[in-house]
Amino acid sequence: MRQDYRHEVKHPISYSDMLDIRRRLSAIARRDDHATEGRYYIRSLYFDTPDDTALREKLMGVARREKFRIRCYDRDPGFIRLEKKTKIGSVGTKDQARLSAEQVQRILAGESEFLLEEDPLLKEFYTVIRNQRMRPAVIVDYTREPFIYDPGNVRVTLDYDIRTGLKVQDMLDFSLPTVPVKDAPIILEVKWDAFLPEVIRQAVQLPVREQAYSKYAACRMYD
Image 1 (tube, helix red, strand yellow):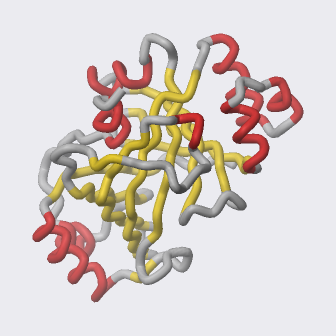
Image 2 (tube, rainbow, N blue to C red; image 1 turned 90 degrees about the horizontal axis):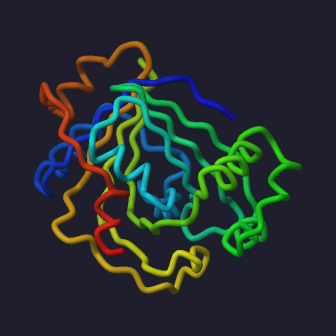
Image 3 (tube, rainbow, N blue to C red; image 1 turned 45 degrees about the horizontal axis):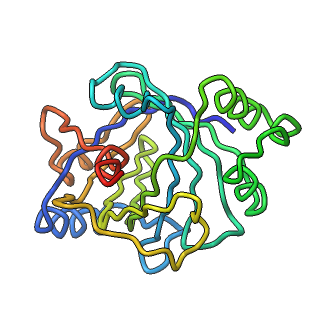
């Protein structure tokens, strides 16, 4: 399933900023129905080439870039997705397909031929695994607080407690020890379609320029 291209901005913020933004958003936006007590836990396993193409492109600020990850929510192995994130300048889109826990384990074990029997995104993933030698690179864990504002199809998220796991083959082992990412800020991310309502802009106090912070790049420092 592919989502349409949406505007995306991301900013590192402080803890006090988060408290203020959370308070403002709570008055005007609704919580995501999938969140428990307003938040959920995310684990992502990112993939990269042997020469770290995705990491280098992110650090160099390449205008068009792609990355693949396997993601699960709230430590639930019953709901896992492969996601391909495409970013072109300040807009992005995401393709996604369901995976079972067994399929994830097969991918981590180096099996990929079965992906050819699945949907187009999984077939594409097989192609990049074979042609670009894509392999698991790093686990990224964090907690997310999502807010939704229907006019403009706006989604605002607050991500914090960013941690990384060193044993990428153990993605579905939720007892896996993880370590906090040093000096990791809280990440404010705002996504919208054609327009960003002024009430949201004021609530999150978006600065003029986006500040870059990549959870993936920050976690790769522990390789």
